[in-house]
Length: 203
Image 1 (cartoon, rainbow, N blue to C red):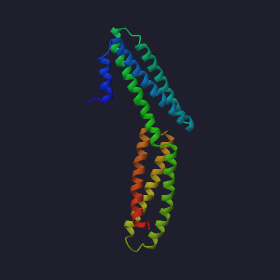
Image 2 (tube, rainbow, N blue to C red; image 1 turned 135 degrees about the vertical axis):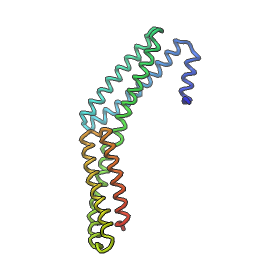
Image 3 (cartoon, helix red, strand yellow; image 1 turned 45 degrees about the vertical axis):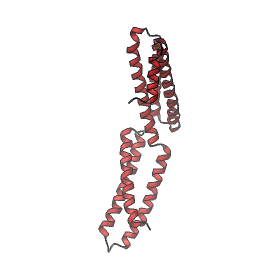
Image 4 (cartoon, rainbow, N blue to C red; image 1 turned 90 degrees about the vertical axis):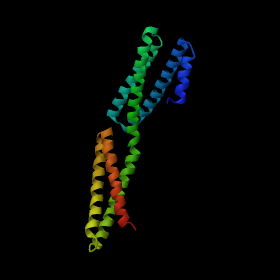
């Protein structure tokens, strides 16, 4: 079922003249392009702050796509009735593709930004410090349940090392979607291993 706003917009188009309907549609396209422009400016500022050349090049490509969409929206307003429908569909697709590309980049930035990376590395540092303490406790109690306890500590040590490796890879790859997915998976398994060890050793 279409959203209420979409129903109102469509209803408004049907209730006015063809010229007015075209003006309404052009106004909607203009608003969507302005929104994309605002998001791109935020992403550009983030990329410049990170001095991420690959990201800046990607955003420049998106900015070029945005300019093409702007021009196509302007051209649409001048199209003859015979060419209008096909051009309108093409512009709608261009805007949707631009919005999807901007959202993809935005999601990548917000998923693992500098602040989250620092916090995650701090968690790994704390876990390593506690791991040393827990290993000492395990040595003192080696007589009972030694294998189980050693397994838990070995698992935590392994997950910390893997998480650090995935974090370094993600940073090197400029947080591509694939690298972030691997990092998220490593972070999840690190938390599980840490919780299991903490449950047994934390006092």
